[in-house]
Image (cartoon, rainbow, N blue to C red; front, side, top):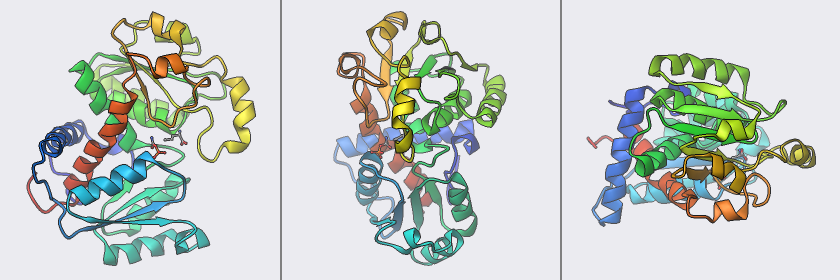
Length: 313
Ligand code: CP
Ligand code: NVA
């Protein structure tokens, strides 16, 4: 299934076949990298990475990954470029399209990323917006596949704030037939339109996407427990209110005990120990968070190669 010249803006836009292709290529590239085999599918190409928010994993995995594929990544942030000084998104899109072969962007407004893609003539990859984090969700499914062998019919329980991560996971689970329960309190539940669209997809793949405020009931029989920070980037002012509202929505021993005995624990990181997850669980034997973090590299290399390479992968 060809993804050549497409964008990756939302998990919802990917077809089931495209997801499978990304996983196949990610598996191949991971093995090539581990075996020291050449895989420079993007020789001579340039990727511009725009960051209007902080990042450790996304920046380093995209930059390292693009370099490993033989290309040259360029890092821009608000302070050091005209992006932060109000140059219109549509101008940035057209200018970068004249120089580079792809754009990766992490910013606040999802609409800005949609506009960037509309005006760009090169592929645009969403590296996180307030609405979605598709590269992370694809990585998460790839990690679950490695550990659990099959995705269809598995149960993922997301604990905490219904945020960008939750949205991409809802779309992702619906796409591959995984059941998902969002254990989120009132006021912090995922977007209603994301819920509607993911439930529509879930009907086609025969799974369910639900919200259940009762954490222990939600977590029962989970194959995967997942959480993310209570206050996302841009919500720093709400930190205290959120801490209070979400205080019971934590992955801890009690929650782990009602999940399946072989359940795995995921967190996109960075983690706030003692808030959305306990130290004991994060560092415990069921946590696969560092495998998950490593897979950002392999999955994003697959995405970049599929969108931008002239070669057959
Ligand atoms: N998970 C993730 O996207 O991490 P960074 O914010 O460090 O990029
Ligand atoms: N929900 C978090 C994810 C960080 C990777 C945020 O947007 O800050």
